[in-house]
Length: 127
Image (cartoon, rainbow, N blue to C red; front, side, top):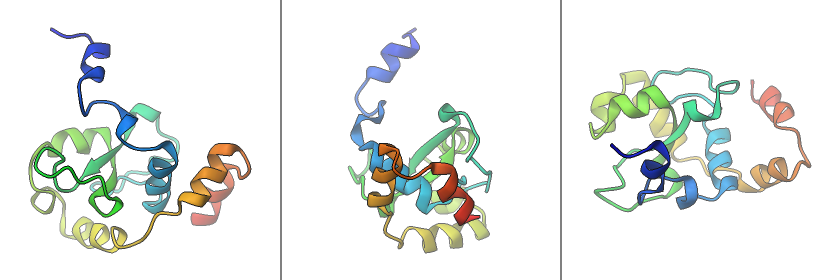
């Protein structure tokens, strides 16, 4: 059995496929909430927060923001390769369809990562 580190080094198993600012911008666009179950992830452990490809990346190498949503680790793992519209509830489908049309604010995310703007301040304004 492969170790966790070996597993993470396999192609497609690291976060190197997306820039940190873009990842954060999508989390911000989605309000740091799991788009499937609605769980608030703003204070969750980093390993509990993930991005999910709506159309599986193995079927279509599409890392566009409109194909990515914030998901808790549990929902991301539970969904697996199930089509997202079959996995999500009706309310989640509507929410995801609205959010995926919004352009993530990468400039804001870069400012947060540089330390110019505190993340807490941004999250407070979103609430």
